Structures are given as structure tokens and as C-alpha cells.
Length: 206
Image (cartoon, rainbow, N blue to C red; front, side, top):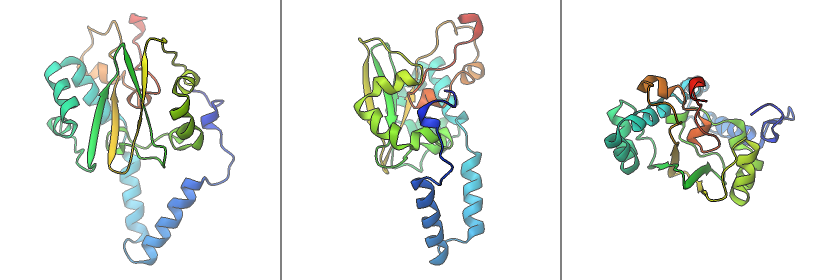
């Protein structure tokens, strides 16, 4: 979405989330749990993560029905098959979008999010507007992202917690039968694995 989207508006003032992070960092340093250099190093590792690993899981599921079944039944084990460590979460759940059902992920309490698979959460995911409206008006929120669903499609909102992380397995775009697994992975966007969007459609399939 463009910069005019309400979820992307910034006031220039530190957000409550940023202030909370600064307070926690100061407390960890004061208590001797971590040094500032250690915190910076961990932050750099987190910042280097991207949605690429999640996209690899999706692309493999699109081309391999057996892997798709494993991904939906035991996401951590399926991720390990591709050399991806998803064991940092107590519970990881992958849900499949279909022609009949669409999933949207939110964290109503803060910003719980599968960072290992999707990288850093977007600002709009952490915003109070999204966290509150996604639950009460998911179709309206999706419409603002440019995703208009037919009334026949059931929309399910999944609320992440400190113990449970969710990732969406989006629908494979039509007209992609000729693409390789690597090419398919490049169609998978971060937002499509949250449920706020759909994967890219290759130009020749439009």
C-alpha cells in the first residue's frame, strides 16, 4: 500500500511500542542481563531476517503436496526439512487460504509475529488501528489494502500470542504452472503470509 494508507501515517513522535522497547533495554542493561553491545548485536541479527524463509516454505508447499501436508500438520518439522529453524516458538501454526476461506493474522495485545520466517513486522501490523479494526471489521481492513473478497468467502481472524505464532499459506496464483520453485518463491510477499494481501501474479498470467 502507498504512504497515504492510514496504517502508515507517522507523527514523528516515538510510538508507545518504541518507548516500551527502550525501557526494557535500559532495564536489561541496569540489571546486568545484557550489555548494550549484546543488545545491538541481537538487534542486527533480527533486522537481517526477511520473509524469504517463509516464502521458501510456501513455494515448496505449492509444488509438493506431501510437503504441504507436513507444513500444515507440523510446521516446525517441515521448516527443518528446508534447513529453517522455527523452534523458537512454543507453537507455530500454518493455516491455508482457499477459495472458500481467507485467514488474517493479528496480535491484539502487542505485535507477536513469526519474525524467524517473515522478518520484522511492518509498522501497520503494530499499530493500534490495525490491531483493533482487524478483529471487528476484517473485510474493511482488507479492502483498504486493496483486497476485495467475495461475500461467499469466510474470513477468519487469528490472534497471535506470546506462545502461538501464525503464518498464512496463501493461494497459488493462477497461470504459474510453468514457474520453478525459486520463481514461485519470488511471488510470495510478506503481506500475503499475514493474509493482508495475495501473492504477486506474474505478468504473463494477467
